[in-house]
Image (tube, rainbow, N blue to C red):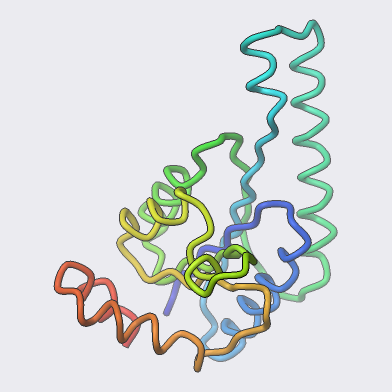
Length: 171
């Protein structure tokens, strides 16, 4: 793997995703790119109600996300590039970024709901990402998983003919 895209969402589990990505790059010297996705329901409220200071509120949210990103990434002695995107449908930005950088892997946090499948694919955007991405996706579920946790997912993907080409890219 030469290029890894790390997707952060501002949650408490971003640190775990970064730790996994940095650990992976220490083995193969891959290039990291961090994409911070930012969205707040204030945008939906603004569409219906309208706020005089909407731009200021949005900029404050983006500034807060940038601070979170810098505090998180400054902990690691790894060179990487980063950018932020605003939007409810972040999966499109992730796929576009992955394609433009020719990513070999996307690492992102997954949900932490009770069911096993929800731990892998939390939101509809996660499903869209899995469907549209041209490289493997490692959905870190917040439990500190290593490579041994990937295997069942890729075995399942290999069985589905439409996903086999995606699964083969890992091996």
